[in-house]
Image (cartoon, rainbow, N blue to C red):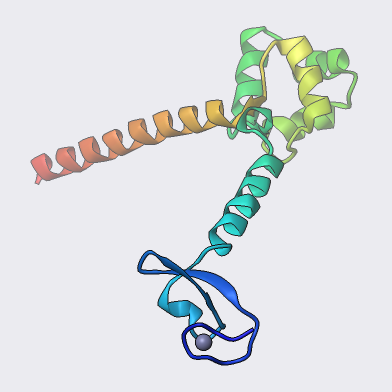
Length: 153
Ligand SMILES: [Zn+2]
């Protein structure tokens, strides 16, 4: 096959050039829009999208799980011993969770939920929302603090 632009013998592709469809070689394809290429790109994109896990299925451990567990346990007037007994784990496990040294897996988090009724795993969208809320509060407090410092001076 001969290229309709330069006349060279080569593998040709259909290329749209100024409204006309020409069969062009690799060197000449740049002058127009290759007709078959955009379709391929679209298909690849679609496949990728399908393979991604939906947002709602992704779960994350909440950031302040240690504080949440401790606060809830104390509000229920339970000792670490009580909690560990009800969770059927060693006291050291509860200790390590409350000090943030141990990140409870989903199994452990389920036990905590059963005993204390608090959810330590959240869906990503929820987590994002809470994190953003906190960050907003934090930045406001910082601006306030700066203002106070300036007034003092
Ligand atoms: Zn050519």
